[in-house]
Image (cartoon, rainbow over all chains, first blue to last red; front, side):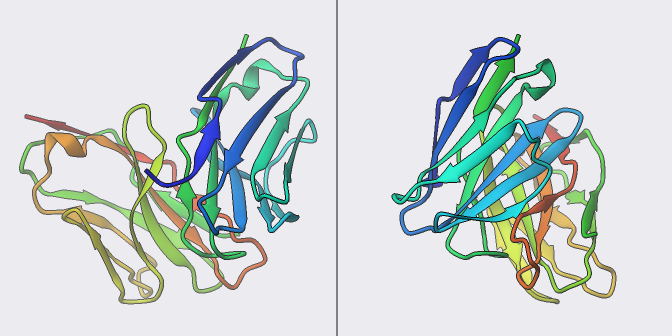
Length: 113
Length: 114
């Protein structure tokens, strides 16, 4: 158990809909990272928050957004969903703002029909 | 930009065989290197890491040495078990860079047969 929790575990929705994925980092970790894992793209970094502030952006679509709350949990919002957004979404946390060891949650499997 | 290249699988071995999964990297700075493992239906677990040249990371019988001269971080295990069947990802992060995210290789699927 990494100490990182993600909800929900599975999500099935329709094209055009909006969903919110939730992540709670390990106790004491200030950084939260979001990654997308798909068969064709592999593991891709989406966005990082550090202590409530956006720290870095990767290949995140404009339809996607995230935030980190004062209690350090984070939410990833995916809107106007397309079939190609079906993937595993992982959250990871670390104790540093960059370069440190990241601990991953179990992931949320999103299926867009 | 920074990148990681690892041998593509799948790799199929018999129990007690020797395992090597090759990983090379390209980085402008001095990255930290990681191996993560993903068991079927689960998230990524940190297997081992190394933060500077010549460091050896080890865990559960797996080892990898940070080789700066060959920009490599190959994963090895002397005797694999059926329970080692999983997907293995090599990754790097740059502690001195502007972004702290991990950059992953494409993953290598390992199947160990009894």
